[in-house]
Image (cartoon, rainbow, N blue to C red; front, top):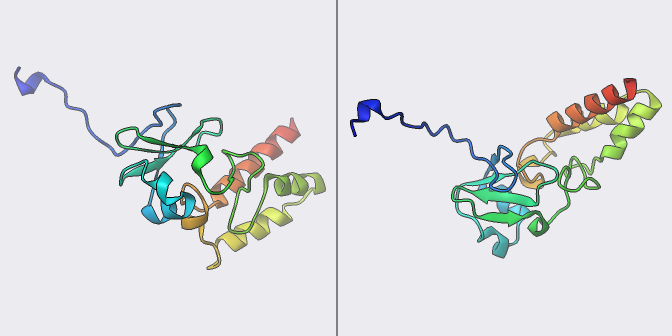
Length: 150
């Protein structure tokens, strides 16, 4: 067939969880070494993605859809574990957002955001997606505040 009439797909680097279809978040090897045992790390290849879907049982997957189940993660972390911390660096939980809203201020959230911007934060190791918790904490605060205002 003439290639002039064949549409080639473009690889934009996006990968989707083979179980739930959620867009994966690329993670670095240093994150995986912290989050997984050596045996669990061997379950996936070099290029690995985190599945951020709360109800999905897959923690990590690779380019050829090999997976590491959430049960293999060393630490409970939100949103995979709703009782786990939103921020492992400073052990910040969803309950602290709820407490701020109940008290009518954002003291705890503001303090966490300041800590997350400081040198003591080590998100690339402590969070399963290797990203800073600040964005997710802010989203969760605004989402919960919006739900309470209805």
